[in-house]
Picture 1 (cartoon, helix red, strand yellow):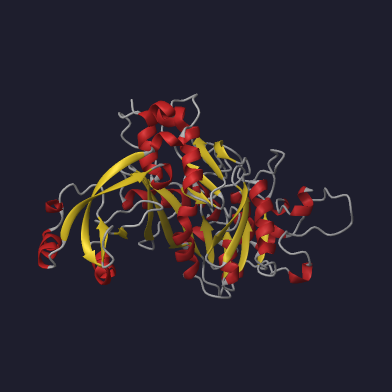
Picture 2: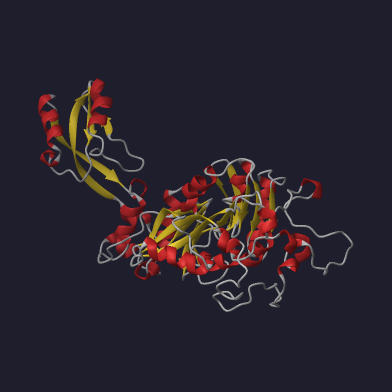
Length: 459
């Protein structure tokens, strides 16, 4: 066991002084005027450690400097041949240089490797950053060292104030996971920025994935100003807010009351109240309610004052975007189960409202197992819809989320045979979970025309 490992044994204080070490490096003696050019030529093979320089003074000479090579280069013969030839052509002298380094000069990965047992093959080398929070997924074998690892992440990343470790899998309907604060302040409310939008959130209460920033932009870039967008599982608004900033009218919904709360805050924070209306209801109910204008007539009558209820999203009703039957896009960002919600489109449209309006595009996110083909995924979609797509399907590969699982975005236009079907949905009005298609927060089955939840109605 090394001194660093002994000093970092679980239960013992974390002693940074134990990381001091002496390195003997290979160095090239170069003319001062050559430093910048040679540093570029040897890029990738020069010393690269925090708070150190790869060019240092050459004691005893005012005209030459030492270009320090990485500690992985034991002999210059290990360098690529064109660099070996350059050393000979420039007649560069090779010498040794002794460098004393400590905790501050080591990378986080180097330190972690020194404190965990040598038989641990994989150590964390990256993390998801959510505002001031660093999110780790530590393997079981690293859990005894979680507080040390968390402290290292704090020390090496000045913008990070809190480090959390994921505990268990996401197994609830709100897509949030349990987390353990392993270092720093236990403050989980934060703010993140994506392109021109700002988002407030409590990381322990809502779903957020910083790795989807590119996908958020890709999809929103495909929208046109003036289009109407339904965001069925909107979360705190990573699609809804940028779409509104682009000039779209957005109806954004999420079942999680905490997501709904932060969605409302983010609508105001980004000054898009005139473009976004927020809802807090079941996804199926939301879809069917927005597909058919006749499903919106009634409002729940459980309020104690006389002020008419309205969807949340703007303080002044005169600023509310008009609720319309003709929408252009429906985003369904719930990869684990969004396909199961597609049955809500079956027979949900009023043909009279779409005499001249084109049926909307659906952007449905899902996971694809390693043993599944695109044809298998399409079959799942068609089964849920209760109709065929007839080649009307575009599949975008979003990202690899696990060795045997990919995240896809499925885009298709709802077929008229599905939209205006007179038969029952393929699930016979029952979700795959066995729950009624429409269900209010009390658990009572209800018609879609009484399920429009607003902030005032939930107060």
